[in-house]
Structure formats: C-alpha cells, structure tokens
Length: 332
Image (cartoon, rainbow, N blue to C red; front, side, top):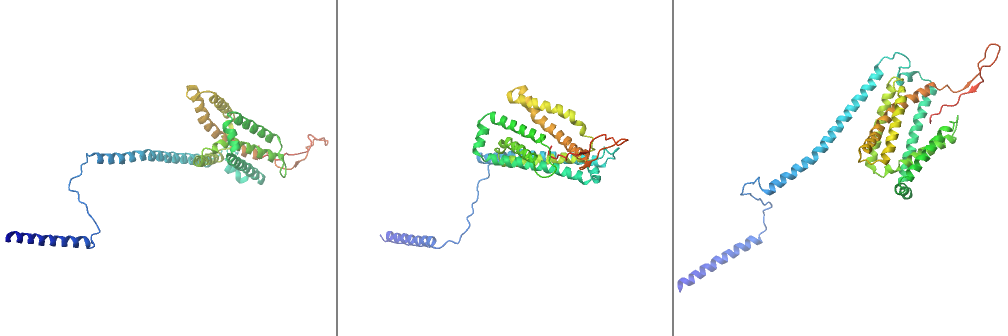
C-alpha cells in the first residue's frame, strides 16, 4: 500500500515537470530563423524526376541551337555581301580608265556643270517623293475598312482594276511635257500614278509591322548597295544590258501570268513561281544598275537650257530654224 502511493506520487511529479517543460517550450518565442534540410539518401541519377529534368534542359538547348545557327548564317552572308560590294566599288574606283566614256560617275562629277548636278538631284528627289506618296497612300488605305473589303473580297476584279488604272496614269504622266517653271498637269499625273502604286501595295500593309520594317530595311540596303556599285563602275558597263534585260523581263512577265493560273503544287506551276520570284529579284537588280547609269547619261547628254540660234551657210541662207530646247524631264 505504501509502495503504491509512493509510485503514484513519483509519476505525478514526473508529469508535472514534463507539462511545465512543454509549456515553456511552446510559449517561449523561437530564436531559430533558418531551417536546414539534410538529405540522408544519395541522389539517384536514374530516377524519373532526374531524367525528366535533364530532358527538359536538353530540349531548351535544342530549341536555341537552330536560332543561333540561323543568326550566325545571316551574319556570315551579310559580311560576305559587304566584302563583295566593297571590292566591286574599290575595283571600279581604282582602275585607270582608257577613255572619257570609261570613267565612273564619281570621277566625272568633278567636272560636271551646275545644271547636270541639278538634273541628277531632281531625278532622285522625284524618286524619293514618289516612294513617300506610295507608302503614305498604302498606309492610309489599309486603315479604310471599305477599301480593304473591296480589295480582299472582290477576287481578281479589284487588283486588275487598280493595275489598269496605274498603267493609264503612268501613260498620261509620260505623255504630258515637263514644264519649264512652276507646277503643271505633269506633277498632278505623277502624284496620281504614285498614289495608284500605293493602292496596289495596300495588301502588303495587312501583313504586320515587323515584316514591313524588315522588308523596308532589306530594300533600302539593296538599292543603296547597287546604286553605289553603279556610280563607281565605268559608265558603259551596265548601259549595254538593255537587250538582255528586256528579254528577261518578258520571261518574268510570262512566268508571273502562268503562275496565276497553274497550281503551285505542280512541277510547271512551281517552276514558274520560282522564276517569277527569284528571277524577278535578279532582273530588277540588273535594272537598277542599268537605270542608275542611264539617268546619269541622260543628264549629261541633254542639251544645256537656253536658246539655240539658227546656223547659216554662205549667202545668209538658214539651215535650220532657231529653237528653244525642251527642259529636262526628271520624272520620266
């Protein structure tokens, strides 16, 4: 009896001490701010979770590899193009011309009279103005729902109508003579023709801003580089390309018309589409070289402005009547 009571008192004392310790532990504010976790088992590299994470990292690396390869290829092509164009320009400027006709435009520009310089400046000013009018018209018409609906939903009727209208405006612009001073019907026809070109290019604006920006940068680079080659080359190098360029233009036109009616999945249709695309790019690059030297040659060979008196033979008989030379036309 006495032993049982003593054991009960001892157990009560132990319980009281344990209860007091637990209360102090849970009521006292904790001073530990960092909890560390220790791994007692080694990492299993063959587990499903490890292999899945490894495969995801490899997939991300594989996705980035083609982009890096593409960027590297573009940089290599751009560097090769710059080196090639620089070499052509250096070759044209460093060679010793055998005659005056073989001199480059840069060499002849040092002895140009003022009216020749003015003609070349006016020609490129009208070119830049026409491009600005076409771009502004295309952007404005792309924001018109009625015009977009007419161009997209009418099939071939609206594009063919715009093409015929553009051809008619260009024909009228070439027929009207350039005025000596002021603004005349020639400038109005030129503005209408440039606006019609913008109407034909309006569907391109629906593709989006980044594509248009890239196309504008590529076009500016191609035009600038080929113009630099043309003005640094001898003056008669590209002027002899008129016949081959005319033949190539006929081939590209026929290929473009054929690709409109043939399926691009067929061999003949795909071939015509390729000729129309890549052949057109190559052809109009040649036309740019040819036209650059042709503009300079026309500005040089056109007579100086002024009145030309009649020539006379013996006895005072006139050979030809006196005449005023027509002004130089920088638009055509």
